[in-house]
Image (cartoon, rainbow, N blue to C red; front, side, top):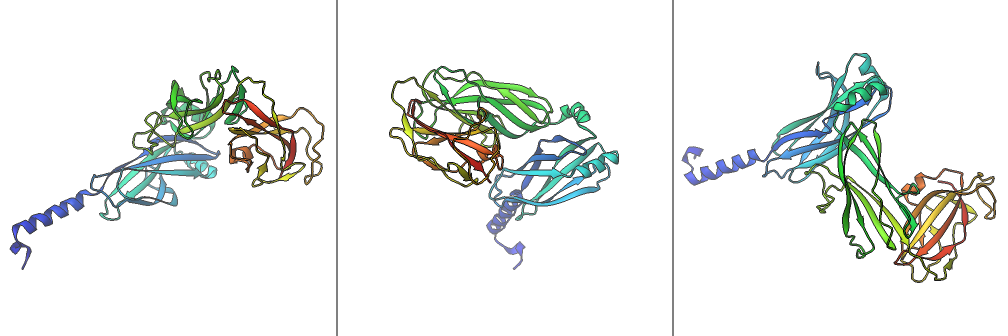
Length: 397
């Protein structure tokens, strides 16, 4: 029996199945940013988000094994990179890649007279074989001055966001009524409009469920400097307690989402925490048991102290002492030098009495340098209810 002898309804089912399989495919691909600038002779890191769209019936994921940098005029492949990307299930997909360009290679391209090259990737559906290619234009400049002149055409692409409070860290303890602002540090490529909002969650929030409200909207044009700094509005300090601050940048609607309508893109959020100390005459407890003290500490060494009754949070502060350690293994705790300089801080939960230094804190320390550290305890209203004497350590990562 051939297919012409099959019952009509079986032919109809077979045709429908074939049509369904054919329609379950990749429908398109694009890159964000579509264009960015690179400078000859300098280290260039390009952050790309690849967006792959599919038909509603698609369920078999996408893959891309390599990327290529191509001369658009001749189609010559200038550089290839084997860096597999893949997504599973149904689309759309957002796949991220960081491409590091060799300064000598970029210089050779500009020496050949090239002003633009194309970074491209082809994405394939392993089930149906359908493919789509996405490209991003890299504008080549012989120097930074020329890059600044030509970068206005490049799309803004945010590489990272960081919020710093007055101390230069993302944690802070301030007095009630003290003026406080934050700085938003934006690492980016290209130029364009940054849209987002400053949001705050105050002491009225329930534990683990911060109730954010918007302090200010941001719509500002970022120049092609690769690093921009924005000031926050004045932050509330009239009520004692713990505050969570965040900046949420607007992103593509098909990006990763947090489920929060006010802050939809999980990759474009930076946070900070500060505690407002209320005024009180309550005696302050002495926190003892500090370790390490007068000894070396590595990046994994736990910093310990004794618990304080009624504490809702602890703040660990680190200060740099003026003179380097003569003996890196042991440091005298009674050393006298210039006024210590605040370096870093950590705000910790009430149940924490031992913690290693965070990655951000470690990044601010120098190997072999002598530091002073102390701990304060705060109640639910932010008031200081405990304070330690100063201890010292030498940082040996």
